[in-house]
Length: 398
Ligand code: AMP
Ligand code: MG
Image (cartoon, rainbow, N blue to C red; front, side):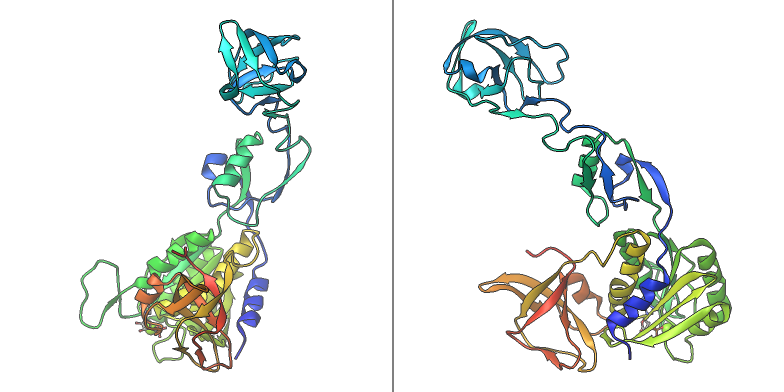
């Protein structure tokens, strides 16, 4: 059996190629990966000295003192009064600092009395935001090794960009296989179950930054599986197949892929998700996930998500791992590393994890309830109450 690290290294190495860049308006870049993580600022931010407060622009050397009011400067003003000695101008937050002024006295501390204001002692530079105090033209600005979020998009807009080069979202074809599968929402005939993996994997692909391409759900029929695999290889950057990869008499996915390309069948020291298939069809990587929904999603998390991120030029899994104390004993397979579905909460001594429900690989409810996967190493028969383990965070901690 292979370790998780070993399998992951093999998978990620196989698809080191990033997708090409495309230029999009900034407003369409949420959740996209920037083509470049370091930019050179073209402008000063802010572009000019301006007031951080509503108040009075003045000369600090004139304070404390009574100053003659000579006008008003609003945000966006293009023509500005000259603040000569003994004068002040009303100024609004974000308005350009008028020539001559070197400080702003906030409205709260100034008494305005007709054409005269009485300003207290004010330091040079008080409440003034200097041009370029956030970013100077020519400075390097780094974006996080992550899909773009609200703050990064705001930053890019403030730097003067209206559009950005981002990686094309890798197209990930999804194939659900199994005679028993029926479309979500459709009535079930005897022996049928709803296809949970198709929609779950599509969502996981989107979350990872990919573009899901659902193929036609197929029964355990080699010819029909083959048609969909060929289509996936033609249209996608990665093909994810769930179900039918094992060694049962009706598991045809392996044979089909081996005929069309190449496939390694791996036993991985991981629970859930021991059997995993990895290979390629016409140069497109293929990952065969176990059919049980929890196994499918956890192995997607461990192996497919980092691969999609790699295609986007992002590293790692983008997940946070935290040390968390197990609050109860949770048994596992001694040979394999377990990713137990847990709920993490704040206890008296820090973060603690409890089982989110049963740990069978068919049980989706505990996975949906879990906010983390507790990682319990190979060689141990259980997570022991009171001991600390790494937890891979999937959601927020209440
Ligand atoms: P398999 O990997 O084909 O041996 O399937 C293992 C288990 O997962 C079986 O109980 C299947 O019914 C179930 N399964 C396979 N594919 C899906 C799917 N798309 N949605 C829900 N359960 C599935
Ligand atoms: Mg099956």
